[in-house]
Picture 1 (tube, rainbow, N blue to C red):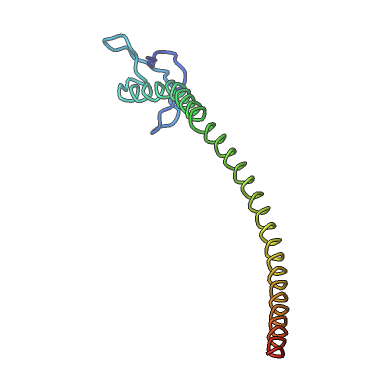
Picture 2 (picture 1 turned 135 degrees about the vertical axis):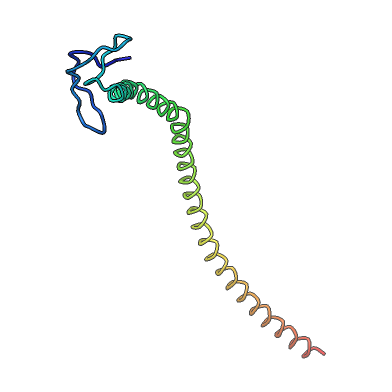
Length: 137
């Protein structure tokens, strides 16, 4: 754990900005404190430790995000692209079916017209046959 000692560089202390540890005064345990202020030195040390651990935290978070990407995001992307391809195929099939239905509609109209004409001819023939029956009776 880095400690402020005589001749140490500049440490960052949030309340005061950059703090120079020029005048370290040894205490009982042989550790010097910035300008003889133990509280300031502890805060400087805590900030320094946090800065050192920040890279470790960033590495851990980056690794966790990479694992999440590999285990969750990539398979989801693959399945989404598969679903998109399936949807495109379905859309093509639906458009083909729509065109076939349109063709069946036109053919159905023709068949209905033909059946109507056939019924008219049959009705005329029935009328003629009825007239012939009446003439023979």
